[in-house]
Length: 259
Image (tube, rainbow, N blue to C red; front, side, top):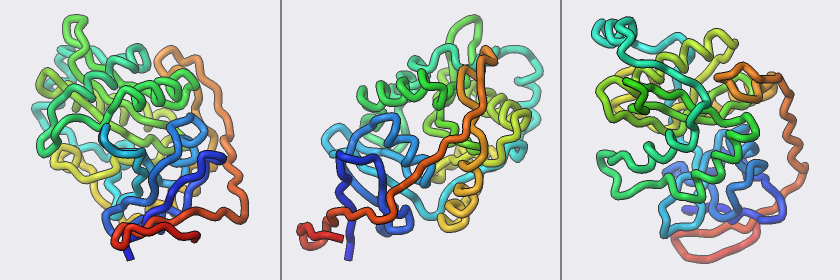
């Protein structure tokens, strides 16, 4: 049966990511509170939906990942990085990076999933020191960048953009450098794209990803502004109740029942 779960607005918890359907869709409903987003990322789940849909929560199988230091850098990109054409900044213009990502046309996508409420939710995470942006500038203008969520020793990338060739790749390069210097062990790229694969990303089974994720999120989280260095390390502990019940929606029969 093609089942997904209806989230309870009274708590921020989720069913196991392993219960996602064949497309990777796990649940719908809930909200985009900072607490729920942290619980989601710590459990291998992320929101992705259009403006005519409820909030949809996904855990894809397989999962696209790359480890800090594994990025493939072509000779031309290496030359671009060394040329000084671009300046990279961290956590100085988070909202603008998100807005650029939202407004960038994507092949095979009609419109954007980065809605206004998503921008506000992730800006809230950024203000709490848990979401970060890597920004590429050329002659003082923002021309590329990426953003994502950090918990423990994993960085969960969300989206990237460029308006000048190689600008997003340069941001990705500086992300790798920063994560290597700070002991991060994995970058979650979510779903497979030609662009990310060309930079060295690869897929692993969700079960393998979730097993490693459990270990990585138990390590201290680097919280704060990564650009200014005003940061502290915190252990984020997520204590899910032992027994959680969810309402299940059967998409084939259009019926609801208790799990």
